[in-house]
Length: 355
Image (tube, rainbow, N blue to C red; front, side, top):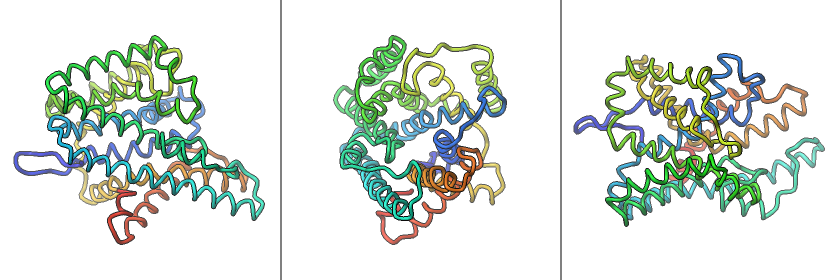
């Protein structure tokens, strides 16, 4: 996943590695950082980056796996589904019993906080079906979306073949139209949070998946990287332009990722980070980057539980300020260390949960 082919050789892609590390930290900021006044620079830029973290991950996923859809073989689909669904279901169960255990412990020692609630089998059901329960691990809505998109793309290229790309473009347009007309919100907002949060975002993130596929399929990223001395400043200029000068109207209602602004900013943020020459960093820095990128998936899976323990239990019990930027740094570091520790357990299964 983190290699690019150059001739007959494969080279580790440090740009993708940095994107994984940086965006996984941005996901933590999205959940555990109260930015205060987001109009202040540079807080505003980091605020925007955290808002496009999940869309960037969707884009990167389909940029890296587009060949799987051009050559839709069932064994590859099964392998990919297995790789995604095993952690999806396993972490759902871990969060359920982990939160139950923490709640019991806190009740016994009589610490009052938001964490002590009654978890039910219904919570577990929502978590396993849609990757989203408000009390457990709602961040797995992303994994649910990723699986749905992957199956959709694979089916299109397997059975429609030559018309698949045209259908993807049509779906891209229809998704944006449904967002701006309010149709997407009307269809899904009537359901419970555990249903409308992940399903409503399918429409909002489909354009990002399509964009990732075509960025790779057209080969445009090679050209943009070749002329990075123009691409990088151009992306920065456009990001500043759309942030502070040109205001792209957003849909009146949505589920967090609706509208052209999110799509444009996602593509610009990805292209900017992709064309930067991270491979020229000192070898020590590259070693650290490679290590952190290896456990980005583990950070995504673990951070929400660790973040809630830190924010809802430790900070509340001690009267400390919650949702600070430094708290996010601490949660990220703890998530990396725990992911690394889990990877040391013998066998392939523990590694599947964090790598």
